[in-house]
Length: 171
Image 1 (tube, one colour):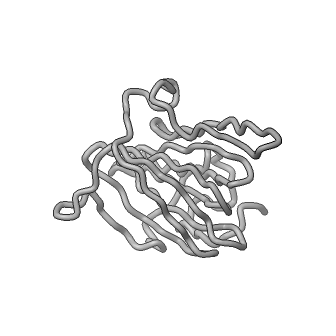
Image 2 (cartoon, rainbow, N blue to C red; image 1 turned 90 degrees about the vertical axis):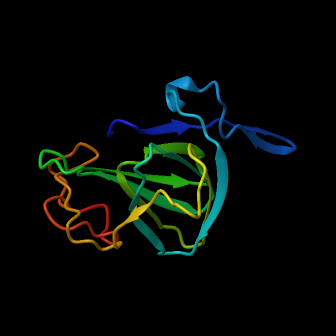
């Protein structure tokens, strides 16, 4: 994974009453590093909805937990260096609780890949300022996002061409 992109399995404690899951704890230092969330948000995305691309320049990290449905999360590193071009792709699902942390200076976005809406709780490490948003945007189908590898795999058939959010992840 790109530095600053991490995935953590969350423990779902199930008993006869239902279940309980800790979504985020400040003492999970191996996952959070020195970052600390300051705001929690909720997002619902309809099936097939793509929310991409954007990045943050003021040091924000985003931490995603999908509680219902499934969401593909991609982070792309170009940062003006032709040696870069790594794209990390993870799918989170309410069926298997995980937290995914994305360093905000990477271009990143999401797509609902389930047949029902995805419901996501996400935390950010910088407060949102509507008067001066820390977001730079690109279109979801920006042809300049061309991965050189995906999840470290330089032989993935989707590399070397503009990223297609709708391409199947298999041959």
